[in-house]
Length: 143
Image (cartoon, rainbow, N blue to C red; front, side, top):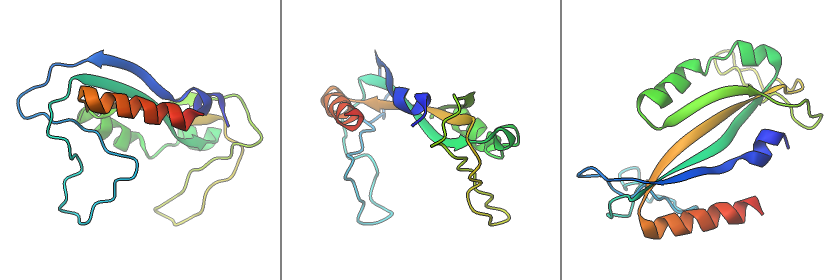
């Protein structure tokens, strides 16, 4: 596990003033919709907090960190206000391999030693009740 994976988790929790129509974005870990029409967010309460999480999406070798086709997806993530993404250098770890997959040409994971990680910072807007559940779940996952 790289140092960025070890540090991933909740970065910040700040109070949030909901705009009319906003709903809590809490999604239980075990949520499995019965159909594609079922709403993702089940809580009708307005959000009271903004939670920012850090998550390592994938590890990359030096070549794939420089020639990254995900830049457009990262820009879209930021444009729609769901968070941000950046590629950061990691300490060389023999256990971390490049997870890049060339979907266009159908090639499998690269497998070279990873030197970088794509880190996402994702914002979630939660009510007070679900903030407690979310933080408890995050704490349990880190242990």
